[in-house]
Amino acid sequence: MGELENRDFASLLDDLIAVRDQAGAPAAAPTIPFDYLSVAEELHSGRIRVSDDAVEAEYREAAGDELANEPPVVAPPDPPLAIEPEAIAIELGLERAGIEDFTRIRRRFAFANHPDRVAPHLRERAMVRMQVANMLIDEASRRAIARR
Image (cartoon, rainbow, N blue to C red):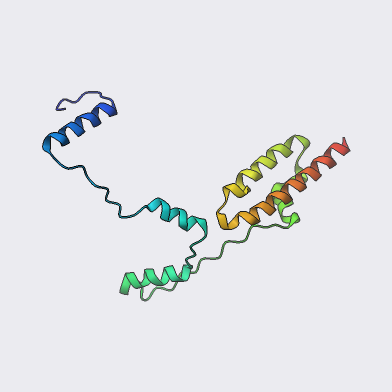
């Protein structure tokens, strides 16, 4: 293992394991005390709610005097996703679309708004948005075909 040469990753790992085994070192135990992935999944599921105020208060408490004179930061709330047909029609851009554009518009909207692609707590609203968007696209497509 002393020579520098082009080697594949597997053979390098084999050599490192052999050196460790020769030294008699015990295999290293995982250093992660709990499953971070399950915690992250819980946070993204929407079942755990943490208010921004509570997080900021805890952060300020941990920072001590460093943030004592700083004003609190107030983040604007996320605007709810519109479910009004007029707002979705504007978002889709149907007024300037041709017959060949409707499939692309539908796919682009679904890519960004499909219930399977949003956070769990937004899925019901995303489902309504998809239904309204599909209805609007179908209606615009029928009108465009009728004009031909």
